[in-house]
Amino acid sequence: MQNGAESPLVAAQRSAILQIRSRYERGELPFETFRTSLDAITAAQTPEECANLLRDLPPPSPSMAALAALEPPALTPSATPQRALARSAPNKRISAFMSETKKTRSAWTLAPNTHVNAFMGSIRLDMRRAQLPAEAYLKVNSTMGEVIILVPDDVAVSVRSTAIMGEVNAMGESVAGMIASGEEEHNPTHTEPCARLTIDVGVLMGTVQVRLVNNTNAAIADMARDAVRAALEGMRRGFENGAYNAPLPSPGARPGLPGYND
Image 1 (spheres, rainbow, N blue to C red):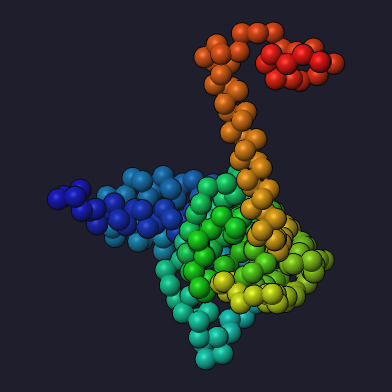
Image 2 (cartoon, rainbow, N blue to C red):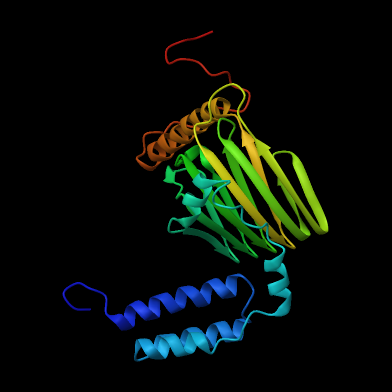
């Protein structure tokens, strides 16, 4: 590291590690190759050595190539200029590799081009909490995993899906079986859409759900949950600070205000 800039070797190692991890999450590399490749990248002395290690990785297996061929074809840019613009933007990744990833409580930002990958893991995304761009594209892959996406009903949504020995439920309609595909759309009828979301789904022995949720009802429920959470937190702090020294009331006692007697 010189003058605060990343050295070419560190940049090459970082890029190589991301590529190896991505290939392993897609099922293209066995675990032993994944582990030894990461060890070799870590020990590399030059960017050229990193490039050679990537070049020496085995190609994807025929089964993975067949799965890629079954993914929904891309639409032409002339037919969907805004979607093409979103897909050309740098992509962000949300992943769960034998783990769980949730974006359901705190505010977060959805990138115009987002790749969601669950490999033997679980991902839950609540778009009600997200700052949405005017146009967004999601590429969702679930390999022996589960992905749940909650979308406000004032967002226009298009879902195209391919399932191999898995299931996709898109806004109440499902495709499932050995090899199945489908396409569903939702356009708000009570208002102009606040955003447009295109989702391409690929499932291999996993599940993906895209659910429409009512924003108003959800906001009220969130307020109630936050109030209960705040109250419980206040009680916890009170007990920790010794504010509650009196014995707890018996199960049959009626609650009352201080100084009030029936």
